[in-house]
Image 1 (cartoon, each protein chain N blue to C red):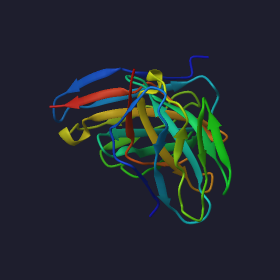
Image 2 (image 1 turned 90 degrees about the vertical axis):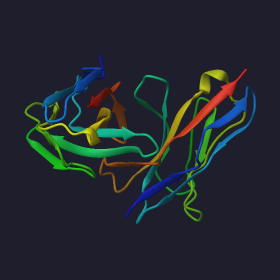
Image 3 (image 1 turned 180 degrees about the vertical axis):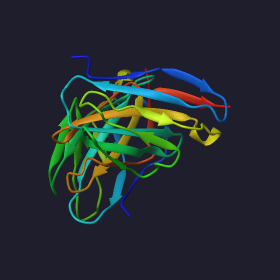
Image 4 (image 1 turned 180 degrees about the horizontal axis):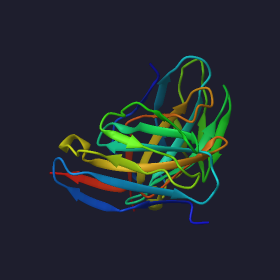
Length: 112
Length: 110
């Protein structure tokens, strides 16, 4: 079945460091791919998405490119801030069904 | 708009008790769903609904019931709580390709 695998955390970085959180997926067809962010004590918020191969999603300085050849959707940010500390979830949705399949989440802690 | 609201925020139940987690949205979205979040496992789909009167099972439906009598409300019922249902529960509604999540209900079953 479909699945999403994320790099294990926690990831601890200093402010202004470069961030990469790896995400790979297994799915038939052409799923849509998402990154969600969960700040402490809150629900999930959509960070960015890509709906087809080679699409790049971007928001708030974060970027991810849909790579079908490597079945990956890695999240990157050039310079993290303390306010980026959160849990990040990679997810896929197959065939516009509305059913999301999530990775296990990666905790990011950014220190001043 | 309030978006997606959930009540209660926290709940403690004893094994065998029943309860209903409430979820409401004021965005007139047809699609709504329930997920549970467990450590190291991400979120897993429990039940979903594509519109009033229509519900279907997700990945982990056992022990949960849902109904959808109105577009706005999508309650999740635990008929006989078990410790394995200790989790954080999120309700979501969907419009186009984007899902909007509620703030969650943290449930502990002792």
